[in-house]
Length: 282
Image (cartoon, rainbow, N blue to C red; front, side, top):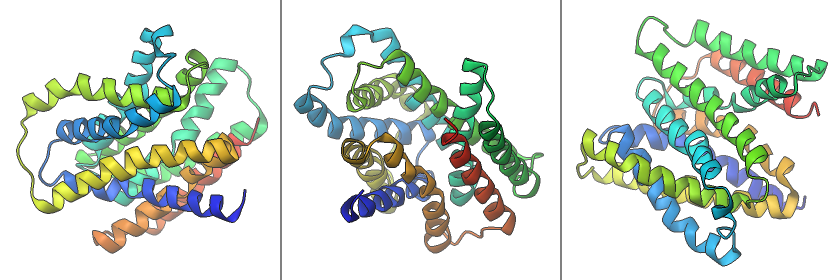
């Protein structure tokens, strides 16, 4: 991986980390359903030309049901859970909780293969210890922050399940094609929900946050992510996922004035270490 790829990797982590503070700003004026529909619809508009040009959509008709399930598992359900959860949890803590995705992927891999490696077990144990610390110190289980944190953990689990499903059920479909289809399907499925919950014109700051969230942190990040996969491989491209929680915390402190507790930082360290150990256990 050369210097340009390294810069792009850090840039991708920075863009992904911005998702959480941008969502917090968007939630000031908009419902979760409206945010998710706008995010997925605008992303689909950006991704479709790239997908058509690369021929990534030509194989989607082979397994339409599997594509629909992938859209539910990897986009529609987790984005709704993530956005709902962020109504009750700070942006920095949200970034940390969603970073548990590799831990849940490792747990599901153990369930599927019925094989437990020592390194994998150690990684999962570290990650779950980080989650437990966050719930004990930074989440009040007796009020809405507990439900919000649970929704974010569930979002991470669904993303993990979606990645495993896509890998197992859609091996012949290019990632760009799967992402484009998932964004398009999710926008169409959730549009009625958004219309029921109410849609109104947001303020300028909310509009800017939503546009950046949709066009840069979602669509732009996916284009950059798949470009990195093409140049350096999926394993190295996914390292950006270990960077975005740190950026999320920094953004939340600088832009939103949030405070980050020592327990949150220790929990983040345990989760990221566990994720890395589990991901490199194969």
